[in-house]
Length: 466
Image (cartoon, rainbow, N blue to C red; front, top):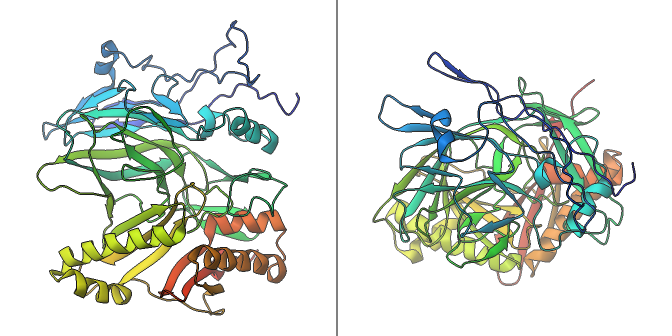
């Protein structure tokens, strides 16, 4: 097999059995079809195996009754497997016919796939992964389940999506594409792909010998359709949410996002088992979900102009832009607006309050539009983590940088941590790049016109005795 030839894959472990009352819905087995007789695509990239789930042969109306459970509260639970019919690779399109129609208050249990329609799985080489990107320029790598049409949703409403439960597959991958993407593509002309086992009992993964990362599964992408028609890449986030890569968006949290088209049209993908704040090498702990259990709710009469996330103790505001300085400005404006609402103060008072109560992090710097998110506690009694060390502590390795340009401060602080991992922890350069992407925590410090501070932290607790 040459590096340009990728075998069809059996997608392991999509949705384990769901036990609802006395009814068991088995959704574990996946099948591989024979290659079609049609000529190969111009890219010479072989077609993905058709993914099917026994008992759920398609998406048509005749199959809906097989995938709906009536709940005691009068709502419904819908089961949505990830198949070639229920997913798109690398793009959104608000003209895409819905694969499922639900009502406000319903629960949806989805499966998701690995990148590129399940072609990035253990055994796939970095050369093959690169080919999935170069053969399809402009297309994102993400496989997106959806869209889901929510009957009551209309433009001007807000869609609330609550994450009830997340169950990943038993493996994940982290990679940097050689000479492409990531925070430092020119410094890493060589690429690497790493596959790791996810211990779902301990909720950890051993990323390197003796280096164990706690798992915090969250959806890298959760999106509604944009107002503008046409196809658009799954990579940049925006006012429709999308590829936010906010690692605090875990089970128990809710996304509030403006609705732009009838039905909202909801997609999810880019499923993560964990991620560093920054995601510097391009990828997190990339996985797929056997169960992504959500509740959708339409909120009328309370419009939003930008997405927000609610966690158990905090509200998260965010900003996105190709320039990290502008992403910060947007995140700040959204946080000031949020604090004014939460605390019942003026915008001027909220702006003065923000540095003392809001914890701002670099979500990611690799999605065309870079992201910053700020956590603000729901009540004054709850304190956010405002620790911003400039040198090593008992808990953290620390790299700190400051510059008038926030992009440069982030570049210098994150590269400082990567070099520290290489020199002080004796980690190979590509492994250090990957570990930083999967576990580093880059935080925004003091900000002024003259100086912007970034503090990148790496928990020492990741290193375990063997």
